[in-house]
Image 1 (spheres, rainbow, N blue to C red):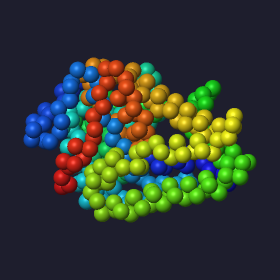
Image 2: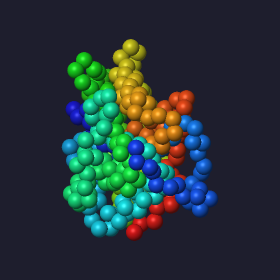
Image 3: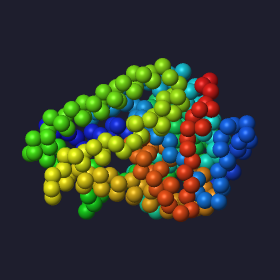
Image 4: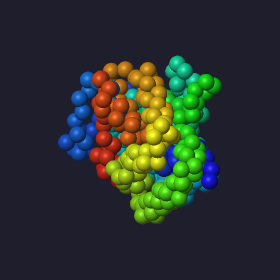
Length: 286
């Protein structure tokens, strides 16, 4: 029973002046202290789908006229947050970590590339006149650890007779993904994202459950959690590098990262977490 390293990542549904901010009393968006770096983590599903992992995601096309209208409305509403920085789930070059695809961005790209980096992040950057788009993803380079050593958990489960338990849990996770996607199939994209950002798909419960498989000094699940934390900590460290006081950041990332990135926003001095839910609730599809 071998699972690709990326298997569980499919659970993550994965200097110009900004536009004026709407009156919060009219927009139903809470006032936020502007003294620190404000960070909104928008957890997403993989809009291009996934069929190569153990936990696969089948999605309807976001390139249809209906979905494009919904994404336009989403971008326009998120733009009322007046972001100065947009973060994408892409590996880029230090020290600036600028996403090179911003240079390639065009309206035509929206018609051909379903990836959420384009459909949400770059679309938002264009609508909100954001020129600082940073790809802050972290993947192991030479000499760095595997940030998601799931195969070690699988091998340990097989060696200790817990393979069936792990298989059942993977199947339950697959069912949860399928049920979520089916239940929200007719929802506007903003509604689906609202449910994704406020429900169990954005929690860390799966990783905590894995610790039950550890025995004594054989602790591959604890190590997986530690390395997953490390990956997100490095993403956050890069975010600190590319922001300054007064910035307003929208992080467009797979939902599996949301728990830890919001944790860092809550606990890092000088940073303030902004809940995306009030903005998602306001989106009116075109």
